[in-house]
Image 1 (tube, rainbow, N blue to C red):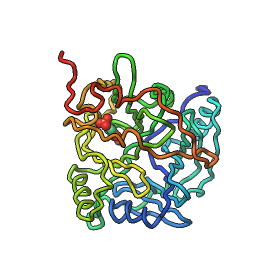
Image 2 (cartoon, rainbow, N blue to C red; image 1 turned 135 degrees about the vertical axis):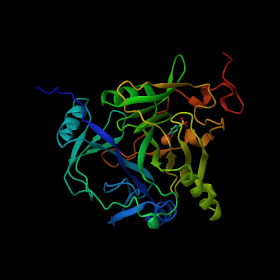
Image 3 (cartoon, rainbow, N blue to C red; image 1 turned 30 degrees about the horizontal axis):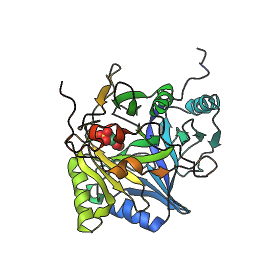
Image 4 (cartoon, protein in one colour; image 1 turned 30 degrees about the vertical axis):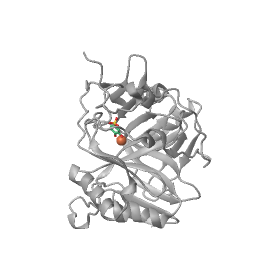
Length: 340
Ligand code: 4SX
Ligand code: FE2
């Protein structure tokens, strides 16, 4: 069989992100001591962290640096050949690509890094070190008892463009926020859940949040109680609540550098070949919080700057569309969708 030159790499799932933090000890206190991620490896000013269910080396790398930023987002691909597919696919789109030899990032085999058409550094990796099973080490669990990485949410100035890019990479769409004229947000997946990546409309490229999976809503509530007990409640930004989109139970936290994470549980299976898209109207007050609670403005406006392949912070381009301004009343405070 002759291979199509632009066949995309077969992405398995979102795997890990690397964040730059300004104080690694403070970041360890937050991500390890409080939230309860597992330290798989550390050294050279970096921490390699994972959830309790993960059998892969890491879901999050924290690196100390001069200013908070997202260094890259990484996806796992199905085979070594997919690394070559990634190089060809992105080169053909005029994107810079770079090979990262095995071992350069602890726990990883050969990888390909690209600066994608949206301005994000994205890494594709196949071989990942398998680590000790900890899913039944209940005795070790702390904090939010995070199981695994679930998704990335990125801020982009042009959501339809981001949608088209990930569509061409072979991602499928589970849910959208839209109206007759515009696409405001979309959730796309490779693994068989609601998403591996989602797009928020805003000045970008920026990283909106990293979503981590917990098994139970109780774990989402427990971390909020722990934060309150420690008078660290200012780390809670939005929620806890029930999303309309995805049906997940959630809370958003901000780390000491302002990086946003979401604790997320109980979304649903999307793996059937004819899985239909669920479309939310932007006027539906339940779309982002099923109970109709207003979304705090900082959630729409604030996000993490991203670095380019050259390590420089990427300038953000203003958005064409503002979801929070598109809503009737623009506040979600008791507004109701038009009667049918
Ligand atoms: O706010 S939304 O209900 O649209 C939403 C946001 C749903 C799922 C997510 O993971 C998310 O970050
Ligand atoms: Fe999310």
